[in-house]
Image (cartoon, rainbow, N blue to C red; front, side):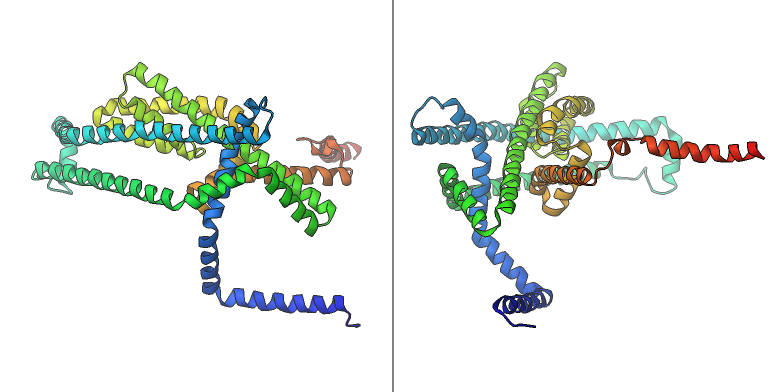
Length: 407
């Protein structure tokens, strides 16, 4: 074999690849430490890029409204300013509404818990008195009559009260951590603003880099998939936010009709949790039912019924039109994407995996269509019951009958 330059490069890269593979297999801890260090260094820029991508969705809308402004720089600056103001107003409104409501709700719960447990005790005692056979059955396994119900109630109240205190402490700690994170995320915000201001320049630089590395045909495909990914993620973000607002508004309108408490708090909670597809709204239902349970247990039951009704309306009528149709992903694969994303990366994985699965689904459909066309497969064979298969089945069924007739 002739040892020319091309052969030497192949040998070099092959040996280098084997060395790297050996190192990866035997130095897993070092690899993880290296990846962790790289992630820590790049995390502000990754967060900034993600923030820029999210803010670019409303900023494009503002740029469309300001298209009459002739100067592109002024139009971009005004659109960015309006986007930042809108986001800050939404966050301020949510926190201004949630924090006082949460404080009042916990205060009301703490005041009503002793009465709630006393009512439960009276209900259980009355039921036992009316059903002595149940009391007799329980007495076989425990000394039910000598139980210190007052002590149990006091312990239950103390446990729940301590739990509420821990929740409040954790909430305050979370707010402090959030403030620290915002302060430490200044670099991410600055990087996000830089990306938004110079997004066309960054896109052009990215295209130049792609075409300088890959062949033109492969570069065209990478740019096409990138644009499709950008379009899918943008539609998912806007659709998910709109769907969350609609669902929260439905609760804000229907709950006062049935005189349910904590309308504003529960509506905002459901709107926020509904940003997480499928499972988020049910988490909001659990929180809402908890807040109502202490005030009125019967009303908590009807709240769950109301949630199930509104969830069916939202899931069957609103979500497919607002989100499902925008990303082009069937409901079954949305459920799979949520489960896989949640298991891998938690809540962030749920939000990331749905549009990513939509892109993969679209690419798989395009690949399948091209392969079927290249192999010239008849469309009749792709139907639910192809005609050729039906004919073969009928022939097999009629064959024994014809042989018997001939005999």
